[in-house]
Image 1 (tube, rainbow, N blue to C red):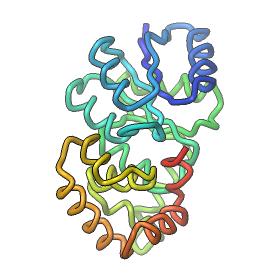
Image 2 (image 1 turned 135 degrees about the vertical axis):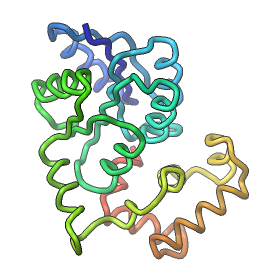
Image 3 (image 1 turned 180 degrees about the horizontal axis):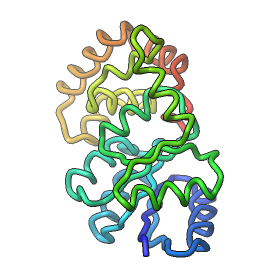
Image 4 (image 1 turned 90 degrees about the vertical axis):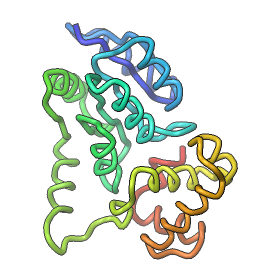
Length: 214
């Protein structure tokens, strides 16, 4: 039996996926969570085999939650769920320790296949995600400037796009406001923008907005 923790901030999505998975032989949803912070608590308490992790959620979000869970529970497998396969999120989620990345638009049988694949210790990428990553790796190919960011810098970007203040970001990530500002200006330099308005425009161009602002 594969015990699954389902993480998504939309109740209808959670309920639908939970019902479908519980109808599948050999898979059981042992818990649900609606935020990154709650997913960490549930992972500690339930110790699931596989976590289905939404990217766009209130709080620290899926990337930071995945990183923290994998640090504490390296045996737990994580599959990231996203509306889109484009943009820098597959790259950053895999760096954070996710074993799989699939689109929320995938058919049910692909979701079930992904769960069993990562449970057995293999990685699973939906075909559109795998194609994007392969193309991005080719020399001289078009890629997102956000892929060059560190995990912490990417987290700062996500929270900034959610209109979080410097103080709010500092409290959520347990760092000082001064450190937040340092990361922000480092991000500006790396992606060649001057302020949050330009950052938001660039994020929209490279498909971050739909996955970070819900």
